[in-house]
Length: 421
Image (tube, rainbow, N blue to C red):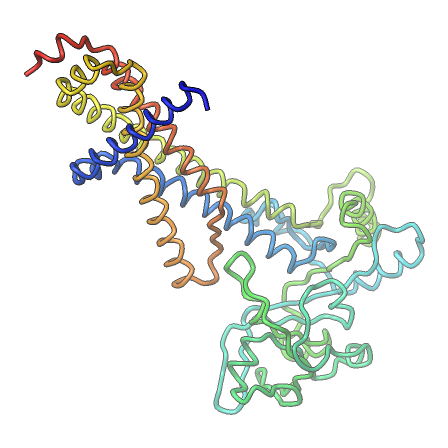
């Protein structure tokens, strides 16, 4: 090992030791100096945690809907909240599924596999003996529904084609309904009371969780379409779920389905579509402004905090240089190089920022754990990349804020410094 490398290692170790001693000797001042960095690291970490959580929750939710399913509805997901755009459109009818399936069967090159009707309501209540669950999500559909939706059964089965065609009073329920009404854990074969009708449970879904942390898939009850209409009438919202052959060819599938719907509704050329063809990408377009808003707010708060923190660290480092002017002069008189003095104060600045970064990370992790415990369905994700990014930002802040004071210290004249009072 060369002399220069050994000397560099010695100087670095000595600078680290001096920095640690200075931080220990001025604990309160060091903490207050690092406070801006702590707040900045908490902000950047929580921002990244929120964005990662939204992305993970979004992907998980879309996997529940199915990436290879598109939906025919009265409105468009891309114009959510703008109901006036489609309020005068004719309603979607469940019979469209039968007509779409007939047209699919007549086209061997179709991008579509099967169309499934769905009529739903959120104003449903379910009872079993003296127990009741309010505002469950009830939907009527056909026996082909499992082909267009995820979700395995933990017990029982889905209703058959014969039960679907006859509109038999059978149902498949979510885990929350099963656990809420049947405390003995056995729901299959037992009757539920829906309004003035009894329906028999034939299957129970495994626990699936919530869509975007809002709508619970475990609070749904699925009936044959005929049974749904007997209980709730024909006033529910109608959707046609259509499974495609290849999720990578969703645009082509949407174009084909649009043509089929125009044909079914007998729309002349040039007339605008009076229906919506929806896919999961529309949810992403609705979610992006939220992500961007969180990112912008986080960047602003982080930038301001780190700026204030950097100014504070620079100021305190200048004060430290003034306090130790005689020490600097003595070290230089004994042969210390300029780079040694520069490294001493630069390392001290970086260490203060690193300590602040570690405290900020610990605080952000504690907040994340608290959110996960209080709101288990809220998507949050604390990733290793956030830790790395936070530490890099801390080091960069330390270097930037400590560079000017360190350079000024390294340029002090030994003779002048030794006379400094």
